[in-house]
Image 1 (cartoon, rainbow, N blue to C red):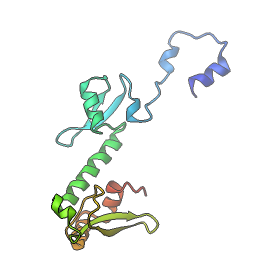
Image 2: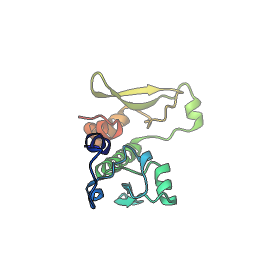
Image 3: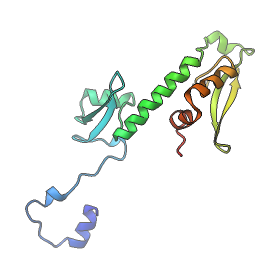
Image 4: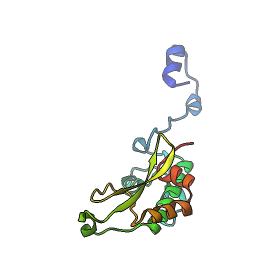
Length: 162
């Protein structure tokens, strides 16, 4: 029950000593709502999940500015696994130069999630860079998916639930 509901129902009652000990501070709904003393989780440089309390200091703001704050340990674990999947995809990918991106004859391949069919598909582009991870051959993209696992890619790269 929320405090305002209690006030509405019991507004005329006297409050005894120790009542505040029964109240639980509301949890932040997202990382932008963190207040002094709120607990959060982040990844260290070596990928270890670390818990911390928000002190509104430079360390807190630095972590927030790069998206390295999670409200739960489970969300931090998901973030770590997502970074691992991206790193594994990049092992098979190619970094294309500006000249290659400007070349109408140089095909780049990427993976996408087809929502209606609930499957990973392999698409291509020539000069449109959407910020995806690109491969020099369709077969290389398929090799990456096979090595990493379609379900891991769906869950951690595309954020598909269930």
